Length: 452
Ligand SMILES: Cc1cc2nc3c(=O)[nH]c(=O)nc-3n(C[C@H](O)[C@H](O)[C@H](O)COP(=O)(O)OP(=O)(O)OC[C@H]3O[C@@H](n4cnc5c(N)ncnc54)[C@H](O)[C@@H]3O)c2cc1C
Image (cartoon, rainbow, N blue to C red; front, side, top):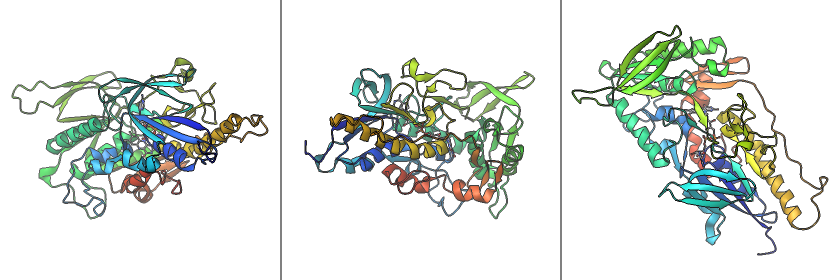
């Protein structure tokens, strides 16, 4: 090895989402060569960054005759080009000139052994098992949608399967007359808002007319509380505004009701075999059935930590089997296991939290590598005094919430302040972040930091 490079160090990053992708870039771009000769192995079932926060618009058919950026009302849906960003070209620069600094392993981690420092991976293509060794590992495996809907990478596949699931929804939405969205969190509100903006019988303010009668669809939004967004502790006025904006688009809210079963409708005529029969249960326990052309569940997420040993997990009710972590974003008991994002037990799951954690994790992994390299060099500098300190992630419980109700705007809350629709439109609703997505995948920015 050339004397100007530090010792070899393999960092395995599990998960290629909003957390894993920027961290892989940061390590490859920012680790000084004289500290460590870093090699990054990125393990994930998706070979493209899925810009999933824009996925509510991805369920709508794409209409190439309309320009979604200049026509913020009645906007067509987002196609794969707006939602998926191939990772291979984004990382090719690190292997220029034959360097082998970056490797992409397309598969899912199935187990991790902290003592042997290995991860078992089931490859997506073919399903074979592969053992990957690490010096340091970053757990960024996030969460899946509980009901399997493609607002995250689908649990049974990768990029292609997620694209196919979105395409199936687009096709169904296009021909549907009746659509049911269930789940009163951010995803449900945003999906109902997108549908209402294009197919609703009314439109909130402005010049855009409601959808022509022939294109209108009945859109029902089933929520198990009086108003949406209760799960985040949002104030009443924000929740009321979300409901009012959806109602004004022509979305009908079915409040205090839960979808307790969903089954394919029998289709004797074979006309539309994809219709679904839903069982609805109200707060009093009364059940009813409802048949719909398209059912879109948005019922929450499940953390992807099933491959980890039990001792790494926070099994308390609050911890929800996320990784037990210290404020340095290292797992309890293991300095060489870092964790970030939806898989972390310190705070709730959100992109906003990922963005803040990246600002702590990136310097911490650099400091950790520096300390590791110093101890490797035999300079006996492993003393606490010589070690570079790691930063502490300050957990903030301030509510920051921005819910778009279609491309025209939305509502939200920052601390105790309600956000005006114009602000939600400016920062979120008009593009749902996709105007920055390519740079995000390329490693030149995070959601907030344009100098990544
Ligand atoms: C529709 C929608 C809209 C949202 N909008 C907002 C918003 O406006 N603001 C906000 O703050 N938050 C929002 N969120 C939440 C936000 O999407 C998540 O907090 C964020 O995606 C977390 O990022 P992550 O990188 O930790 O995990 P994820 O995005 O879940 O990525 C996890 C990665 O790990 C991979 N993976 C999973 N299992 C394994 C395994 N066993 N081995 C290897 N890889 C694995 C996945 O395929 C993926 O690549 C939204 C969520 C949804 C669903």
